[in-house]
Each structure stands twice: as structure tokens, then as C-alpha cells.
Length: 266
Length: 313
Image 1: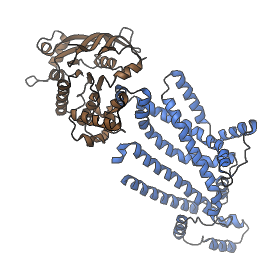
Image 2 (image 1 turned 180 degrees about the vertical axis):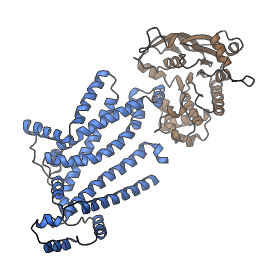
Image 3 (image 1 turned 60 degrees about the horizontal axis):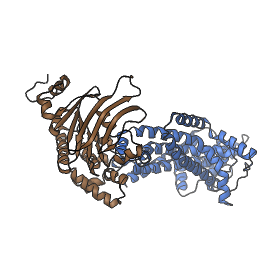
Image 4 (image 1 turned 90 degrees about the horizontal axis):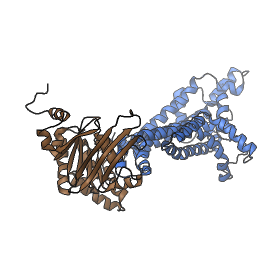
């Protein structure tokens, strides 16, 4: 299995932090073609900074980043901005946590979904719309023609997250980066979105990096889990192994934190 | 469409109230026009005769509705001081003031939007400080002082124009507009500074929003993010601000006319106020109010064009 994403010895240090405080401290992992990797950890563990480094969204100049990140063979960390922009939205699709604020409020849904095509291809408007409708159907949005002309405030959170997913997968990226994609949503909708991600992974062989603080969500979707704590990757193993035999004390705590039917919360 | 109709109703009601206030104010403010016209030595009979002639002896509400119905038809009444129709007195002067106002407004919009974008996308600290300082300085100089400086520098030193040598648009549009460039700029410069500051902070706060990160994640170039995403969002508060400026630009024009000796309504307004020539003052007040209300109406329409969230309400 060829690696789609390879992160090697990633180190991120914010310029306004103490000299020996690394937000991400020597993290290495890889994702194979069509694989789903869950990256878990509590807030501040460095999982989002890792994701931002992968997507090149860390403000250059505010953070020192070292190490290597290769996406399908091309190095993203040290490449010029223009090259990075070519990759973003084309080979790497990103779904963010807050669908409500991640959409431009004054732009119709359709143009936002097809934006990757507008940036990366020379398609005509009509062609783009065709693809957008198709992507919306892939994301299981009902009545895509209607939603195409709607504005974000006219849709529910779940529909918006589907629209965000449609936008992220429209150019069939090899890797989908989902940063807490269900955290802002209702529980029932969470399950639907997770199923959707699973289906996209299976049907289009799209690799997914799922970032979450919720081990339960990760267990549903992923075969392999990486656990982060204080900027370090402390475990990276198949999901069943981690759940049956958590080696690290921190992982044990995370697992214990999952509410189950026969465990009292208080 | 419903939105526009609603706004149009508000516009008409506002104008009605303004006309009522403009009319009533001069009934309450002390100062009798007949004293002004006949002098303090006049007999009580002569005054009463004049009051009857001017129609001032009739009840206020009747006079108001007569005045209003005349106003709607373009008859602004007769000047007390000159005994000629107010509409004739304004016919030559009002268009000049309006040309100046519209030109100043156009300069404000045309200059402030690109400069605001520039200021909003300045990425270096030095650039930022330079912009803020220039902005601060231009904002704090009053328009009439810029006008005086402009007269001195471009009129006296470089002799590019002769202050006071105004050419009416009736003779030559080109010369008229040419003469108005400096006065219009004088009015516009402080306004531009304020709008630039507003747009800059609006752009900066929009740039931190999540949807900008999304746009970046799709491979958009920084410039495309600014033009396609940030700008439209950032303009929403600026439109309101520009509409509010319209009022100040009009009154600013009236002052600047004095500096550049432009024969607009300014002198007429001043002499009419001191001369208690109420029909003239009322007409000008209502016309200025109408301009402000109409600009705000247009701003409301623009607003809903830019921001789809307003259309629903």
C-alpha cells in the first residue's frame, strides 16, 4: 500500500511561545491509500496544529515549522506558496469543524462548492455546476438544484456540513482532512456525517485523516488511531488493539472517558 | 421587492415628518419676518397689512398644508425678502451645490475603496504605521482648511486655477467640473480617510473569519480571497457609513462653496437665515433632508443586494 501522506519528524514552534515549548514535537506518521487514520487527543495536544501544518494553513512567519510532510510524493512544508496553492483543494480537501462559519455568508452555496474547480480548472460555469450537483449528490444532499442557489444561512448545520464535504471532495482529492467534522453537530446528524465519510472512503478510495477529541467517533470510522498528548504522538496502532490493550496511561484515560451504558458518569 | 416597498414607505414618512419639523420650527423660533422687511420703525397697521399679504395671519395648519401641497408641485412659495418665487432663486444655485456634493461623494467612494483594500491588506508593520499616520492626519484636518490650502497652493503658488473664477455648467460643463475638482477633493479627503480606516478594520476583522480559511483551503490566492470573499463582507458596514457621510458631504459642500466662491446655495442659505426669509430656508432644509433620505434609501437597497441575510427579514 503506497503512502498518500507521510509526516516525518514534524516540529512546530510558535514564535510567541517559550523557547522549549513545541506545539508539535517530533510527530511522524503516514496514511496509506484509501486508509482512514484517526488522530485523537485533548484540546491543546497539537492535533489541530498538525492538521494545519499539513494544509499549509499555519501562518507563515508566526510559527517555525520543521520536518517533512509529503502528500502523494510532493513536499508541502518547504515548497513555495504557489505550489502549495496548487495542491490545496486539488489533492487535499479539508472539512472544518464549524460549518456555520466556514461558509462565506454572502455567497451562494453552489459557487462555494465548485470553487475548487474555478481555482484549479478551466471549466465553464455550466460544467462546474454539473460537477457541483454531482458532488452534492455524493454528499447526500437532497434537492441539489435548489440548494445550489441557497445562501448558507438558509441551511441547517447538517446540510451545511454536507455542502462543505461536497466542496472538499469535488475534485476527488486523494486525501480528505476532516478536522472535528461532527463536533458542532447534533448527535443524530453526527452519525449520518460519519456514515457519509465512511461511504466516500469506501466508494472512492479516498484516504481520510480524521481529527477528533472523541474516541467514540474515531472508533466508528477508523481502523488505525494515533493518539497525541502535549505535542507528541504517544500511540499509533490499529483501533481494536488500542481499545483492548491501551499501553499508554493517557490513552487509558481517554478510553475511560467514553460514556457507555453500563458505566456511571458520576 | 417587498423590502424596497417597505423602505419607500419609510422614506415618504420621513420626508413628511421632516417637512413638518422644518415648517413648525420657523413658527416657534423668535423673529418676525415683517420686522425684518419693514424695519423696526414700522407701524402696527403696516405690519398687519404685510402679514395679511404674506398669508401669515391664517392658522398654522392651513398654511402648512398649503405650503406642502405647493412643495410637492415644485412651488416652494415666495421669498419674503425678494418677493420672487423661491424656486426661481434656487434654480441656478441648487444644481451647482448638487454637482459639488455628488462629485465629492463620488471621489469619496472611488478613492476610499481601493485605498481601504490596500490598507487592509498591508502585511508589513512599517506599511501599517505609515497608513495609520497618514490616515490620522488627513482625517483630522477640516475640509474648509484643506480648501484654503488648496486655493493657496494650486491657485497662488502653481497658478493652476484662479480662485473665484467659477464657470457655470450652463456655459461649459468641462470648465465647471474642472473648477469643482479641488473643492470636491477638499470635502472628500477627510471623508476618504475615515472610510479607509473603517474599511481597513472591517477587512482585518473579516480576514480572521473561518470562511477565509476555507477559501484558502481550496487553493485560492490571497488576492482572490480578498476580491471574491472578504471584500463583499467587509463592505457591508462601510455602505452604512458612506450613506451617513452623504449628509455631512452636503453640508460640507455648503461651507466649501464659501472658500472657493462657488455660487451655490450657501450664501443664499446664510442670508435667508439671518433675514428670516423662511420660505427659502424651509425649502433648502427639506431639499437637503430629501437628499439624505434618498441616499439612505439607495444604501438600504445596496445593502440587501450585498447581504442576502437582510432579504429574509
